[in-house]
Image (cartoon, rainbow, N blue to C red):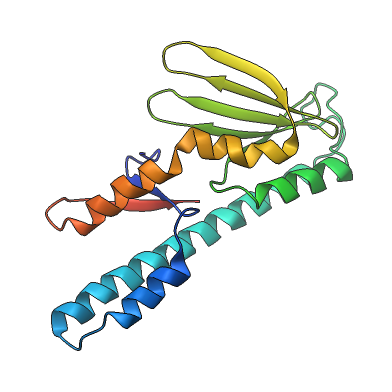
Length: 186
C-alpha cells in the first residue's frame, strides 16, 4: 500500500509488538551484527508508535473541530453536530486498525474515508442511529448499504487486507537491498 506522499505504508494493527520485543531481547548474542539488527527492529517499532500517535492526535483534533462547528457551519443551513454522534464517532474511531480521513457532512453525518492509490474507495457516513457504507472498486463496481456500527472495524480490515500488506512490507524491510521509504499507517 502506498500513502499519498508515495511512501509505502505499514498497518499497525496486526503486529504483536510485545511478542516481537521479547523475541528481539531473547535473540541478543552480544555480536555487533546482532545488536545492530535488533536496533533496526526497535527503531522500526518506535517509528510505528510515533506515527500512529501523531495520526491519533490529528484525528482527535479533527473530531474536536467538528464538535465545535456551529449551526449553519457550511453557510447552507447545516446543523451543529450532536454530542451523541460525536461520542459515537469517537468510540468507533479508536477501535479501528487504520485511522481514516474525517469530514463533517451537511446531512448531519460524520464521514470516515479511506482511499487506495488504485482507486479503491471506502467511506462510512456515521449518523446517530445508523451507518451507511459506500465502497467503489477500481473496475467501477459500487456498493452502498447500511451496516451496524460494530461492523466498521471488520470492513476496514477487509478493505486493507492487513495481513498481506503487513507481510509484504516486512519482507521489503528485511531485504537490505530494496530501497524503501516507510511511513506507517495508523
